[in-house]
Image (cartoon, rainbow, N blue to C red; front, side, top):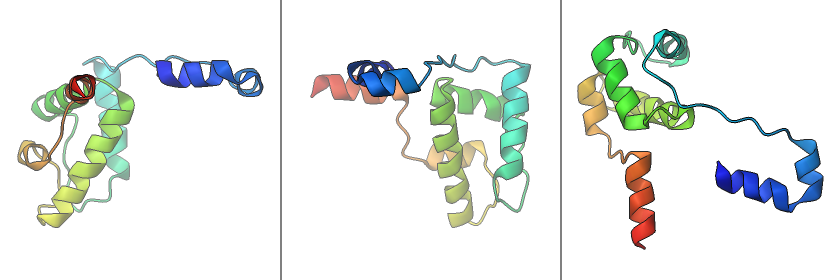
Length: 113
């Protein structure tokens, strides 16, 4: 993030130790679907969620706005919800139960403070 870049830039020792790498947002493409398939393999749920199927993949992409960290947090929270409600897989219904605010929504809320 820009904040992280600024923090590193203000401390010369840190700036020299770390290379800056910008990560692009995920696009709805085959790489994204493959990522979802591989990510699903490490989610400890009893039933397959099929995160890569278009409807669910689009919903995840919309909610995370394409940010990998957001997507990871979102799917982890959804997995917890799936365990709690005993469905043991992530669905659109699972995602709709989450009290999730998109990154842009959180940013807008912060700017109003």
